[in-house]
Image 1 (cartoon, one colour):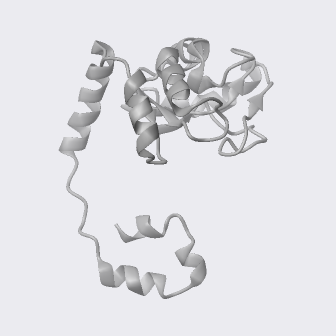
Image 2 (spheres, helix red, strand yellow; image 1 turned 90 degrees about the horizontal axis):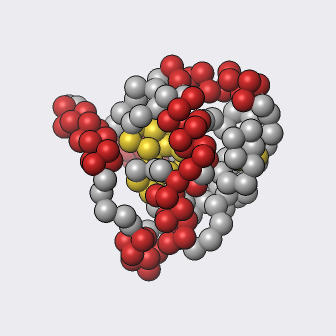
Length: 181
């Protein structure tokens, strides 16, 4: 999954806590778009909760039909499964249901929601549109790739305990679990 389209490279805010706004021209942002355009054939991609004012001055890419159609699908040429970044992040405003509805209306195939609150999940399911043919086709491509991958190695509890016991700093490293696989 390629992320976060069209890039956070120039963002001065963290979308977990606020809404980054990129005020550069599309020409100035072209270098930022290059890695995404070069990998446009990736089976899946995740949006960035950033405003690209040269395309849409009001809405972040994740909820901007204009940005998804013109910039991600058009200019960058990405046609894979498009997943929103986590909608509980502070860059987006509104209730979880409102955010989910806006994500789907803008053209994302899937909504990413990570907080796991059952009431929010129920609200999201209430605004979830029927699966479209194009989304189903994109999901099928991703599923074929997932099915063809070798199974991951088994979790090694002793190795985990050994690593965790090394330093407190390692325990706080978000990549600690990844290192075990």
